[in-house]
Length: 287
Image (cartoon, rainbow, N blue to C red; front, side, top):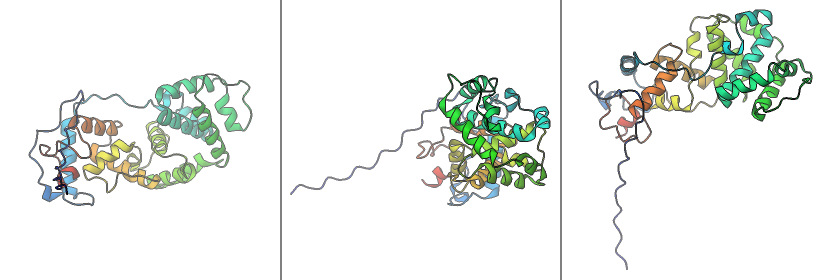
Protein backbone atom coordinates (compact mmCIF):
# COMPACT_ATOMS: atom_id res chain seq x y z
CA UNK A 1 0.00 0.00 0.00
CA UNK A 2 1.01 3.53 -0.68
CA UNK A 3 2.42 5.53 2.19
CA UNK A 4 0.11 8.36 3.19
CA UNK A 5 1.13 11.72 1.85
CA UNK A 6 1.71 14.25 4.58
CA UNK A 7 -0.68 17.14 4.33
CA UNK A 8 1.00 20.39 3.45
CA UNK A 9 0.20 23.35 5.62
CA UNK A 10 -1.97 25.90 3.91
CA UNK A 11 0.10 28.84 2.67
CA UNK A 12 -0.31 32.12 4.47
CA UNK A 13 -2.67 34.43 2.62
CA UNK A 14 -0.92 36.91 0.40
CA UNK A 15 -1.17 40.49 1.60
CA UNK A 16 -3.96 42.36 -0.10
CA UNK A 17 -2.62 44.50 -2.87
CA UNK A 18 -3.20 48.07 -1.77
CA UNK A 19 -3.85 50.45 -4.65
CA UNK A 20 -5.22 53.37 -2.66
CA UNK A 21 -4.09 56.88 -3.50
CA UNK A 22 -4.00 57.64 0.23
CA UNK A 23 -1.14 56.97 2.59
CA UNK A 24 -1.50 53.84 4.70
CA UNK A 25 -2.90 54.35 8.20
CA UNK A 26 -0.68 51.51 9.42
CA UNK A 27 2.63 51.93 11.22
CA UNK A 28 1.63 55.10 13.06
CA UNK A 29 0.70 53.83 16.53
CA UNK A 30 1.47 51.09 18.99
CA UNK A 31 -0.44 47.89 18.41
CA UNK A 32 -3.52 47.30 20.52
CA UNK A 33 -2.97 43.99 22.39
CA UNK A 34 -5.39 41.29 21.13
CA UNK A 35 -6.27 40.46 24.73
CA UNK A 36 -8.21 43.74 24.81
CA UNK A 37 -10.53 42.77 21.96
CA UNK A 38 -10.49 38.96 21.58
CA UNK A 39 -14.26 38.55 21.60
CA UNK A 40 -17.06 37.50 19.27
CA UNK A 41 -19.17 40.38 20.53
CA UNK A 42 -18.83 44.10 19.90
CA UNK A 43 -15.48 45.35 21.14
CA UNK A 44 -15.33 47.26 24.42
CA UNK A 45 -16.11 50.98 24.25
CA UNK A 46 -12.55 52.12 25.19
CA UNK A 47 -11.15 50.04 22.32
CA UNK A 48 -13.66 51.48 19.85
CA UNK A 49 -12.98 55.01 21.08
CA UNK A 50 -9.28 54.49 20.39
CA UNK A 51 -9.99 53.10 16.91
CA UNK A 52 -12.20 56.07 16.09
CA UNK A 53 -9.48 58.50 17.26
CA UNK A 54 -6.90 56.75 15.06
CA UNK A 55 -9.15 56.81 11.99
CA UNK A 56 -9.94 60.50 12.62
CA UNK A 57 -6.26 61.38 12.97
CA UNK A 58 -5.45 59.62 9.71
CA UNK A 59 -8.42 60.86 7.69
CA UNK A 60 -8.56 64.43 8.97
CA UNK A 61 -6.82 65.89 5.93
CA UNK A 62 -8.44 63.73 3.26
CA UNK A 63 -10.34 65.42 0.47
CA UNK A 64 -13.00 62.98 -0.66
CA UNK A 65 -15.55 63.20 -3.46
CA UNK A 66 -19.11 62.31 -2.51
CA UNK A 67 -20.15 59.05 -4.11
CA UNK A 68 -23.73 60.17 -4.61
CA UNK A 69 -25.20 63.45 -5.88
CA UNK A 70 -27.50 65.43 -3.64
CA UNK A 71 -31.26 65.47 -4.06
CA UNK A 72 -30.98 69.17 -4.89
CA UNK A 73 -29.30 68.16 -8.16
CA UNK A 74 -32.68 66.71 -9.13
CA UNK A 75 -34.63 69.79 -8.07
CA UNK A 76 -35.78 68.32 -4.78
CA UNK A 77 -35.51 70.92 -2.05
CA UNK A 78 -37.45 72.69 0.71
CA UNK A 79 -39.38 74.79 -1.82
CA UNK A 80 -40.71 71.77 -3.72
CA UNK A 81 -41.50 70.10 -0.39
CA UNK A 82 -43.58 73.09 0.72
CA UNK A 83 -45.49 73.03 -2.55
CA UNK A 84 -46.41 69.33 -2.35
CA UNK A 85 -44.72 67.31 0.39
CA UNK A 86 -46.29 63.96 -0.54
CA UNK A 87 -45.27 64.20 -4.19
CA UNK A 88 -41.80 65.42 -3.22
CA UNK A 89 -41.30 62.44 -0.92
CA UNK A 90 -42.25 60.09 -3.77
CA UNK A 91 -39.85 61.83 -6.13
CA UNK A 92 -37.13 61.65 -3.47
CA UNK A 93 -37.69 57.90 -3.12
CA UNK A 94 -37.42 57.50 -6.90
CA UNK A 95 -34.14 59.42 -7.04
CA UNK A 96 -32.73 57.55 -4.03
CA UNK A 97 -33.50 54.20 -5.63
CA UNK A 98 -32.06 55.13 -9.00
CA UNK A 99 -28.91 56.66 -7.51
CA UNK A 100 -28.11 53.74 -5.21
CA UNK A 101 -29.23 50.88 -7.44
CA UNK A 102 -28.47 52.12 -10.96
CA UNK A 103 -25.64 54.53 -10.18
CA UNK A 104 -25.51 58.34 -10.32
CA UNK A 105 -24.93 58.57 -14.09
CA UNK A 106 -27.84 56.25 -14.94
CA UNK A 107 -30.05 58.05 -12.41
CA UNK A 108 -29.31 61.43 -13.96
CA UNK A 109 -29.94 60.06 -17.46
CA UNK A 110 -33.26 58.49 -16.44
CA UNK A 111 -34.36 61.68 -14.70
CA UNK A 112 -33.44 63.79 -17.73
CA UNK A 113 -35.59 61.60 -19.98
CA UNK A 114 -38.56 60.89 -17.74
CA UNK A 115 -39.11 63.93 -15.54
CA UNK A 116 -39.44 66.60 -18.29
CA UNK A 117 -41.76 64.24 -20.19
CA UNK A 118 -44.06 64.08 -17.18
CA UNK A 119 -43.61 60.31 -16.74
CA UNK A 120 -42.53 60.53 -13.08
CA UNK A 121 -45.58 62.55 -12.05
CA UNK A 122 -47.96 60.66 -14.33
CA UNK A 123 -47.27 57.36 -12.60
CA UNK A 124 -47.66 59.03 -9.20
CA UNK A 125 -51.02 60.43 -10.33
CA UNK A 126 -52.10 57.02 -11.65
CA UNK A 127 -52.35 58.15 -15.27
CA UNK A 128 -50.64 57.08 -18.48
CA UNK A 129 -47.79 59.36 -19.62
CA UNK A 130 -48.35 61.25 -22.87
CA UNK A 131 -44.90 60.45 -24.20
CA UNK A 132 -43.46 56.95 -24.43
CA UNK A 133 -39.99 57.08 -22.83
CA UNK A 134 -37.08 56.10 -25.04
CA UNK A 135 -33.50 55.16 -24.25
CA UNK A 136 -34.25 54.60 -20.56
CA UNK A 137 -32.92 51.78 -18.43
CA UNK A 138 -35.83 49.32 -17.98
CA UNK A 139 -34.91 49.01 -14.31
CA UNK A 140 -35.53 52.73 -13.88
CA UNK A 141 -39.06 52.27 -15.20
CA UNK A 142 -39.58 49.18 -13.06
CA UNK A 143 -38.62 51.02 -9.87
CA UNK A 144 -40.69 54.03 -10.89
CA UNK A 145 -43.74 51.80 -11.26
CA UNK A 146 -43.12 49.90 -7.99
CA UNK A 147 -42.72 53.10 -6.01
CA UNK A 148 -45.78 54.72 -7.58
CA UNK A 149 -47.80 51.67 -6.54
CA UNK A 150 -46.46 51.76 -2.99
CA UNK A 151 -47.08 55.51 -2.62
CA UNK A 152 -50.65 55.05 -3.84
CA UNK A 153 -51.15 53.11 -0.60
CA UNK A 154 -49.52 55.89 1.45
CA UNK A 155 -51.39 59.13 0.68
CA UNK A 156 -50.21 60.91 3.86
CA UNK A 157 -46.72 59.54 4.46
CA UNK A 158 -44.99 62.95 4.45
CA UNK A 159 -47.52 64.26 6.96
CA UNK A 160 -46.98 61.16 9.09
CA UNK A 161 -43.22 61.77 9.10
CA UNK A 162 -43.79 65.34 10.19
CA UNK A 163 -45.83 64.16 13.18
CA UNK A 164 -43.01 62.02 14.58
CA UNK A 165 -41.14 63.58 17.50
CA UNK A 166 -37.89 61.61 17.52
CA UNK A 167 -35.31 60.47 15.01
CA UNK A 168 -36.09 56.84 15.84
CA UNK A 169 -39.79 57.35 15.12
CA UNK A 170 -39.06 59.14 11.84
CA UNK A 171 -36.91 56.26 10.65
CA UNK A 172 -39.34 53.61 11.87
CA UNK A 173 -42.22 55.32 10.07
CA UNK A 174 -40.29 55.50 6.81
CA UNK A 175 -39.06 51.92 7.13
CA UNK A 176 -42.55 50.59 7.90
CA UNK A 177 -43.94 52.38 4.85
CA UNK A 178 -41.20 51.84 2.27
CA UNK A 179 -39.19 48.96 3.68
CA UNK A 180 -41.02 45.65 3.72
CA UNK A 181 -38.64 44.19 1.15
CA UNK A 182 -38.69 47.28 -1.08
CA UNK A 183 -36.13 49.88 0.05
CA UNK A 184 -33.13 49.62 2.35
CA UNK A 185 -30.13 51.94 2.12
CA UNK A 186 -32.36 54.28 0.14
CA UNK A 187 -34.26 55.13 3.33
CA UNK A 188 -31.07 56.36 4.97
CA UNK A 189 -30.14 58.42 1.91
CA UNK A 190 -33.61 59.96 1.88
CA UNK A 191 -33.30 60.99 5.53
CA UNK A 192 -29.84 62.41 4.83
CA UNK A 193 -31.24 64.59 2.09
CA UNK A 194 -34.30 65.62 4.11
CA UNK A 195 -32.04 66.69 6.96
CA UNK A 196 -29.59 68.48 4.66
CA UNK A 197 -32.47 70.47 3.12
CA UNK A 198 -33.74 71.44 6.58
CA UNK A 199 -37.02 69.63 5.99
CA UNK A 200 -36.69 67.04 8.76
CA UNK A 201 -34.84 68.05 11.92
CA UNK A 202 -34.71 65.77 14.94
CA UNK A 203 -31.98 65.33 17.57
CA UNK A 204 -29.89 62.28 16.74
CA UNK A 205 -31.05 62.02 13.14
CA UNK A 206 -27.41 61.80 11.95
CA UNK A 207 -27.30 58.23 13.29
CA UNK A 208 -29.84 57.31 10.58
CA UNK A 209 -28.16 59.07 7.65
CA UNK A 210 -24.93 57.16 6.98
CA UNK A 211 -24.85 54.60 4.16
CA UNK A 212 -23.55 51.28 5.51
CA UNK A 213 -23.23 49.26 2.31
CA UNK A 214 -21.81 45.74 2.53
CA UNK A 215 -18.19 46.88 2.22
CA UNK A 216 -18.65 49.36 5.07
CA UNK A 217 -20.37 46.75 7.23
CA UNK A 218 -17.54 44.29 6.62
CA UNK A 219 -15.03 46.89 7.81
CA UNK A 220 -17.15 47.79 10.84
CA UNK A 221 -17.49 44.12 11.74
CA UNK A 222 -13.75 43.51 11.50
CA UNK A 223 -13.04 46.59 13.63
CA UNK A 224 -15.53 45.43 16.25
CA UNK A 225 -18.19 48.14 15.84
CA UNK A 226 -20.77 45.58 14.65
CA UNK A 227 -21.62 42.11 15.91
CA UNK A 228 -22.39 40.95 12.37
CA UNK A 229 -21.85 42.32 8.84
CA UNK A 230 -25.33 41.21 7.78
CA UNK A 231 -28.25 43.62 7.65
CA UNK A 232 -31.40 41.77 6.59
CA UNK A 233 -33.84 44.55 7.48
CA UNK A 234 -34.23 48.23 8.19
CA UNK A 235 -33.58 47.86 11.91
CA UNK A 236 -30.20 46.22 11.23
CA UNK A 237 -29.33 48.92 8.68
CA UNK A 238 -30.11 51.56 11.31
CA UNK A 239 -27.70 49.87 13.73
CA UNK A 240 -25.05 49.78 11.01
CA UNK A 241 -25.64 53.43 10.14
CA UNK A 242 -25.06 54.40 13.77
CA UNK A 243 -21.87 52.30 13.72
CA UNK A 244 -20.58 54.25 10.71
CA UNK A 245 -21.07 57.46 12.70
CA UNK A 246 -19.39 55.94 15.75
CA UNK A 247 -16.36 54.88 13.70
CA UNK A 248 -16.01 57.78 11.27
CA UNK A 249 -17.95 60.75 12.66
CA UNK A 250 -20.98 62.79 11.65
CA UNK A 251 -19.61 64.37 8.47
CA UNK A 252 -21.59 63.68 5.27
CA UNK A 253 -18.64 61.71 3.90
CA UNK A 254 -18.32 59.38 6.92
CA UNK A 255 -18.82 56.18 4.93
CA UNK A 256 -16.43 57.46 2.26
CA UNK A 257 -13.79 57.95 4.96
CA UNK A 258 -14.41 54.43 6.19
CA UNK A 259 -14.02 53.02 2.67
CA UNK A 260 -10.84 55.05 2.17
CA UNK A 261 -9.42 53.76 5.44
CA UNK A 262 -10.14 50.13 4.53
CA UNK A 263 -8.63 50.54 1.07
CA UNK A 264 -5.50 52.29 2.31
CA UNK A 265 -4.98 49.80 5.14
CA UNK A 266 -5.66 46.80 2.90
CA UNK A 267 -8.44 45.55 5.18
CA UNK A 268 -9.86 42.19 4.13
CA UNK A 269 -11.09 38.91 5.48
CA UNK A 270 -8.24 36.40 5.95
CA UNK A 271 -6.00 39.45 6.04
CA UNK A 272 -2.34 38.94 5.24
CA UNK A 273 -1.31 42.11 7.07
CA UNK A 274 -2.56 41.23 10.52
CA UNK A 275 0.96 40.63 11.87
CA UNK A 276 1.95 44.21 11.18
CA UNK A 277 -1.40 45.90 11.78
CA UNK A 278 -1.78 47.77 15.05
CA UNK A 279 -5.55 48.21 14.92
CA UNK A 280 -7.98 46.28 17.08
CA UNK A 281 -9.47 43.89 14.52
CA UNK A 282 -11.11 40.48 14.49
CA UNK A 283 -8.51 39.34 11.97
CA UNK A 284 -5.75 39.90 14.51
CA UNK A 285 -7.81 38.32 17.28
CA UNK A 286 -8.15 35.20 15.13
CA UNK A 287 -4.43 34.72 14.73
